[in-house]
Length: 360
Image (cartoon, rainbow, N blue to C red; front, side, top):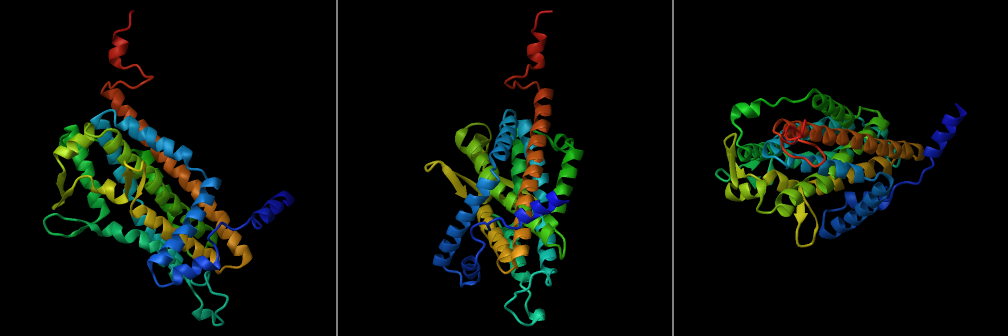
């Protein structure tokens, strides 16, 4: 018991991450201008640098690259990858709403000590507002509209369009596409993510862990998933494979809407070929608002609550990384099944064609 108490004491005396200070809270509350946005951006970059040092994402990125590289070896495997990825991502945006609600309902947990009347002191909605910003464009993105009606398109519609285009590229019939099932491990993974993402009303530790999951999801989407997907599919293999197909067939119609087939990848991020760096999309904006939510959660709290929130935020990042990692590894394994069934050559693995050529 003494060892556990000493550990807890050390955890409660760790320095705060950069950005969890009064200046950040003032920038969040200030009138939005280009200058305040720049200052908040600089605060965020300091915070992000500290997170990367404590919780490196290198392994997560490599597993995503491995999964995509495996899938890209064959059009059918690539369709399977995007089908799994569509299902996986389809559970992320809806998970934001329960977290927003649980933060908003925790009014007694987040009270401003400088406000003398307790009933007037809650700032729970201010935290919830920053998290909620991450879901607004998911349900109607002003930058991506139906080419006929001008209607704003939700990100699920965009992802369905890309998936349909990849299926067309693979030459799969509707029956063949329907033949792919959602594996049980992916259903369980989705449930675990949504449970972690939701937090719990009135529970500071669980809400901070949920913000850690939120941060991990947005960071991975911006800096790992969509940037690497665009680089690999559209730049490293320019005028080849899927990129060549989309150049020849740039538009897709699904659910009564018509739009550019690559829209889903482009809206979330990309890769700047000239600068050879990430081209940030909406996920980077979501990252900054997630940082703002955490800064507000910590900023007005007492010393012990600050440390509890920060400790659990970092734990949420670790747990979130594990769940995303499980998906990338699982998706690769599913694609490997397709490659094996279709006898597609893979470095280090002998195909049935090779095996049949071996001397008896």
